[in-house]
Image 1 (spheres, rainbow, N blue to C red):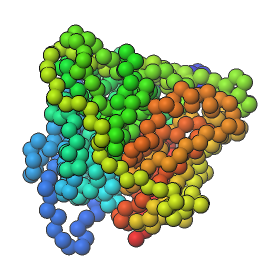
Image 2: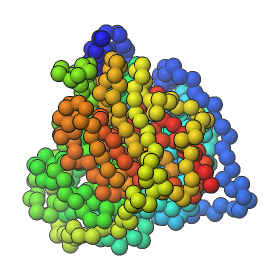
Image 3: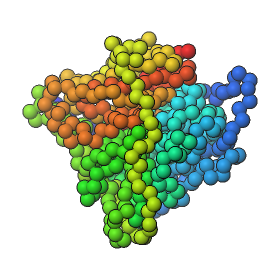
Image 4: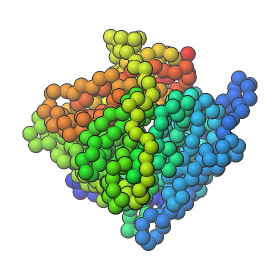
Length: 540
Ligand code: C2O
Ligand code: CU
Ligand code: CU
């Protein structure tokens, strides 16, 4: 059996051509756009929707200066407020990211999304990652609209305060549209979280982490070849908040950092350069019940993390760097000595840098002395824990088994089907269920037969992680796992969870009373685009 890794696969197949993103070149993707369905009328019951906030978001082409020399052609969301708080939409000058949308729990929001991606031929649709909104408002790939068309969202924000985000979700086009620049934060506040005194305003900072490959003319390069589809896109330039080498001037204060991994497939092992522990105050869907310290924290694509960054005792002139430490085991395991062979080390592809290498992300540069009145709260917001015993299927968890067959990742042996929902993918509104995500081995597969790490995500429901267990069948599982396990934060509300090779993660989720069809998928965006996604239905 021949074994491949990222590096030698390209040499062996000659797949080194690199498409350049931006404008019509994106149409080089061989997948034809999917037909968009007409927007559904959310007010089918005849009641008038009176938005507290009425927004326009337009996906459009633009340019930003990122590197010395040519400007980079990007796609971006241009946002504006039709009615409601004019500060609800905050553009990020000089960045393709954003805008940042700020809403309060209980607000009714209308967003008119227009696909203005001229010349691209690409359908698009926005998904509100982490929000539990009605199925028709969730941005299912089948609701994607063609260039020139619009989709109107109307929903009430019912979720707890947290750092949510939005990004495109057209099937087979999500990965390249996110690389082109389409993504923004959706920050929800509420009374409960307001009772916790945390840094705010200038001391509450977004940290959106992404990676890119630039070509010789400063353009984002994206090569949707077989290798990228199989393993995921890894860049060699790190961008934070859309900026290379981000250096933030800070004061001797405490900061709230809202971190989002907006990368397609890169996983980060976040740490402070000087060994200070990371103080975690929140996860995907809001604050924890109490802060926790970790030597490092894993952040896989789609996940969020809120951190209390304490600079109170730093001196002016100090620098604190946010880094990603080296780790192993996310891919390419089962090499020499492994019973199934294969894999070897994750290597480079298309100019990208390997998964798991050490990286510099951003620098906090202490510039000003300021007196701080805040100290780290001992209690944050209460979290009601789901109990396994309360799950309707406590004795028989639903299983989602991740496998690879013929170079394609599958969920329970199935590929994505735009319309299909299998019998074992139907749940009842209001019930608490336990689901197991099982990262299985792939005997006989030539790439990564022991699997790779997958960030697993559910639309339409927030969950709690109940347990993790690691297969002991192959020693290689434990070796890699030991380099990441202390950084898995399972204490809070989540919608995306990292599942390592050989690992089974149990999730408890109560499906909201929002009947309809949602997707669940791997948030490695190349995996999702290539079919590692399924529908599930919440039934009334
Ligand atoms: Cu962040 Cu299905 O998405
Ligand atoms: Cu989502
Ligand atoms: Cu995956």
